[in-house]
Image 1 (cartoon, rainbow, N blue to C red):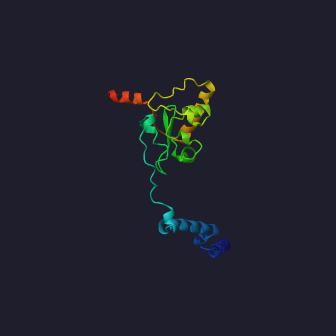
Image 2: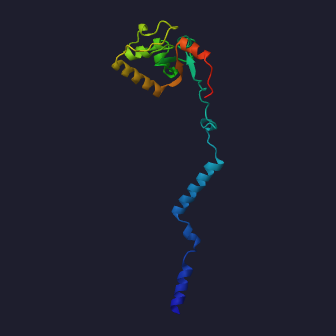
Length: 187
């Protein structure tokens, strides 16, 4: 019986079970949970304006259009400071407004703005004589360019496709007028 009494005395001397829950690790975990709940439900960030509740408005959508050399010419960036800058490469019209420092007024490629830049880019020349003078005539077919020049032009075109948006296609005035006379098919 001494054993039973001795054992009961030991059990009575032990701390209650609730005291086993109060450990340093449990105190740290409880503090972290309370802090997370407080920051989630009660406290608001002091710089609420730094976190907008809605996403900023994106740029306005650009409608894909068909351009002629005459209708492309005004998009050379000279109309206003924020006027778009477009040019064409192999019939694709690119919006290069993001590169206004290069393609806008005063830039090294400014003579291509509002024009078909295909021949100049293929030949690596930024001279005025690389541009089509007759805006009412057919587009430059680039038939007299060699394989190296066409490869260079494809490289430029790939670079523009990666960096800039295609906003339309360039057609000759005659093709544009022929297209307006044909009925639209219901395909």
